[in-house]
Each structure stands twice: as structure tokens, then as C-alpha cells.
Length: 167
Image (cartoon, rainbow, N blue to C red; front, side, top):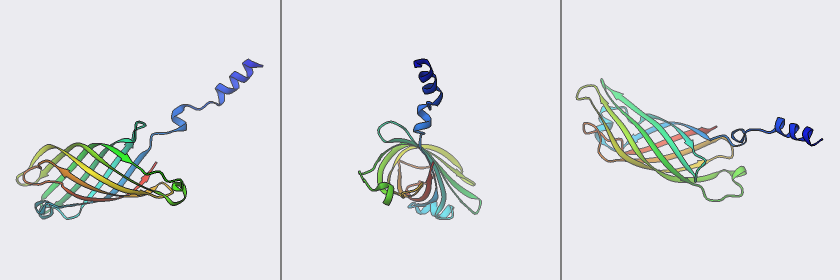
């Protein structure tokens, strides 16, 4: 009888990952660069997207973004790879009304300017984030990116606005 109960428990047990999958957040939006030179060589605002993976450790996440714009044979690309710390105030009604979150991230920005006077560079930078998670998988988010330096006189500093989906 004990053996039957043990076999039944093992057969119906689910792996720990199936009970708490790692949340992945996909974001699509625009980056409005504050650098007038970026606005001159790209259509402003630039298309932007991001994949963020929340780690099961103290509200940390890792994100990989992509922003791109081009105009008249010249283009500019920014690929931020950041480690982020996200905070969310306690809200007992979050499942009904949603919840606010905010945070900051630091990491590397891989920059490229294409066309005439092309070049690439890797710079240190960061961002501030504020967002709203609806009581479903959808969310909206605003980020402000600050990068130390740039590439060929172009810097991706600016405001990014996203809509996204949490898996």
C-alpha cells in the first residue's frame, strides 16, 4: 500500500519548472532619441523591441533590446544588453486592477552607424523604467536610456515607449 501511494505520488508530480516558469516579456515600441544628430540620420522615432527574462533571484532581469532607424542611406542601431532590478509595490488587488512597477538597469550598448562615416562602438549605459502591468498578460512601459558616449557622434539617449506581453 505504501509502495502504491509512493508510485502514484511520483507519477503525478510535476517538475518545479512547470509550476513556476521563468517569465519572459516581449516589448515592441519606439525610441525617441534626444540627440538631434540621431534624429537627422534616422526617421524619428526609431523602431524598438526588447526581450526581457525575469530571473528567479531578487527581482532581477536580463534584457536584450534593439532599436533601429534609417534615412537617406544612413542608419543607426543600438543593441542594449542590460541587467535590471525591478520593484513593484505591494498591491493586494493586482490581479483585479493591475500593478505599477519601476526599476533601473545597467549594462552594455552595442552601437553601429551605417552608411557614409560608418563605425561601431560598445559603451556602458543604463536606463530607468516605469511601467504598468494590467491584470492580464499585457503591459505598457516607459524607459529613459542614458549612454556614456556614442558612435561617430551619435548617442541613443532618449525615451522609449513600449507595449508588451508577458508569457
